[in-house]
Amino acid sequence: MQNVTIINHPLISHKVAMLRDHNTNTKQFRELVEEITTLVTYEAFKDIPTVTKEVTTPLETCKQQVIADNTVAVIPILRAGLGMVNGVHALFPTAKVGHIGMYRDEETCQPQEYYCKLPNGIENMIAVVLDPMLATGGSAIAAVDLLKKRGVTKIKCMHIIAAPEGIEKLHKAHPDVQIYCATCDRCLNQNSYILPGLGDAGDRLFGTK
Ligand code: PRP
Ligand code: URA
View 1 (cartoon, rainbow, N blue to C red):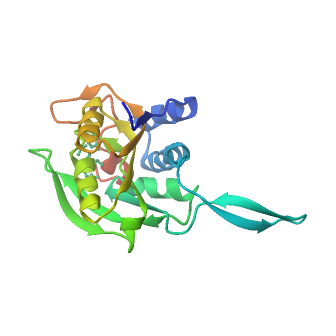
View 2: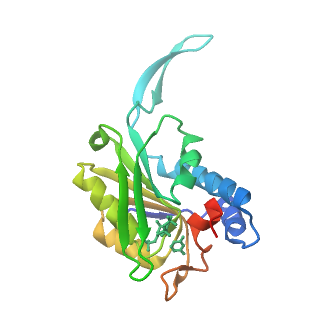
View 3: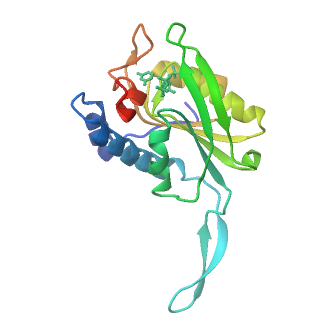
C-alpha cells in the first residue's frame, strides 16, 4: 500500500516484545514507548525537507543541510500519544507540539474530541500525528480531519501497534497521509482492541488501571 510503512527492524521487534508483555511495569512501558518512537522517527523523518546552512568547523567553512525552524509539529492524541513526544524530541528537540484530546466511546468506539490546541502557523508545517495504537482508525481519521480543516496539507501518522483494519480505514479516508507503524498485528477483537496488542496503552502508560 502506497504511503504505508511497517518498519520491520530487529531492534524495534525486540522492544515491542517487551512492550506487549503484561509483566512490563509503568516505568519500563513509558521508556519503551519513547525508545520505539525514536526509532520510528528516524524512518518517518527521512523525507523532511532541509535548507542549506553555513557551518564553520575548526578547520574551514562548509555548507550543511539542516531542518529549518517551524518545519515540523508533532500532534499527540491524548492521552496515549503523549508518551511518544519525548521519543521524537530525543532526535528533534525543536519540533513544536500541538495537542488533540480524543477518547473512544466505550459503547460505540467512536472518537469523541474534547481538546485541541495547535501551534500558530500549523498550516505551513508538516504535522506528525502521534498515537501508539491504531485500532479501528477512528481516532487517527478524526485527528487528520481536524488538521485538514485547519489548513494543514502535509500530514504523517506515527503508531507503534496497528491493526490491519485501522491501517486500511485510515489509508482509505486519507490516502495522501503517510502512515508509519512499528508493527502490524493480527486483527481487532469484538471490543475493537488489537490482538495480540498490548492492552490499553493509556492505562499502561499512566498506571490508571
Ligand atoms: C486509544 C488509543 C487511540 C485509540 C485508538 O485511546 O490511544 O487514541 O484508542 O483506537 P481507534 O483506532 O479505534 O480510534 P483511548 O480512546 O483509549 O483514550 P486514552 O488514550 O485517553 O486512554
Ligand atoms: N486502544 C488501546 O489502547 N488499545 C487497543 O488495543 C485499542 C485501542
